[in-house]
Amino acid sequence: MEAYHPFRSEAAKQAYLAFYDERAQQWPVASETRIVGTSFGDTFVRIQGPIDGPKLVLLPGDSENSLSWMPLIEALSAEHRTYVPDHIYDNGRSVYTKEPRSPNDFIQWLDELFVALELEHLRLVGYSYGGWQAALYALAHPHRLEKLVLLAPSATVLPPPIGLLIRAFAYYFIPLRFVTKKYLYWYGPDAVRSIQTRSCIDELIEELMLARKCFKRRKFVHPTVLTDQEWHQLNVPTLFLVGQNELTYSAAQAAQRLAAVAPTVRTSVAAEADHYLTLVRPKWVTDQI
Image 1: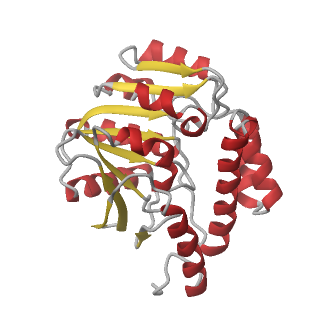
Image 2: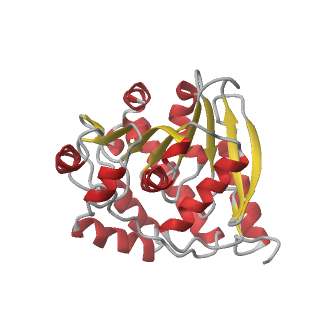
């Protein structure tokens, strides 16, 4: 692979990393960073919080990275030793050498990462796409986990409605700013209602546009819905958090399904909140966790 992989060119690499590093200066807590080797490539991880605190891993959503946890990291790191990776196959400082092609590949990557970091009895929190991956990992390796938090996970509980799929298709395959803005504003009605959180969505749009120019095109592994049997088999204490105005699926219907097939899963719904829970209701999320 080229020296600038996974970027399109050396200039693209320098442009994105300059943007990334400038934003990283806003990280609100003292941290260390590590590059962790796996069979899928090198994973960049931010580590902070008391060394003897409970181990807490935070997985970002699709098209995001460790910096997306900025609104919560200070509160969560007050008592926890937090580990926040850039996904191996997404925007950020991680560098993949083998493409994940299936859900099982993500499970293998996470397990290799946790073994390398010597993480046992950890608490795993996944947001959106990372929430789906966290659920898969909990099914495959429940012995490693003490607790699991699924924060508005992609699919996992219910399939997305056709309206979302159509909009998402346009968002992924028409890399124009106005298309991206229209999609994110539609997806986050509560987030764009406030000037402060709207500015965060606008920053995300800027990063997405830059990342599309700088990174090589990646193949998307579609999130899946867990079967009734899989939910029955999930024996890790689990918390499911979702916004009342979630558009990935109906929050009420998701809560109803979990009550029916996985009654041990604790469910909490945030009022006046959309998919961007970490922006719209950060204190609520940290309190729940």
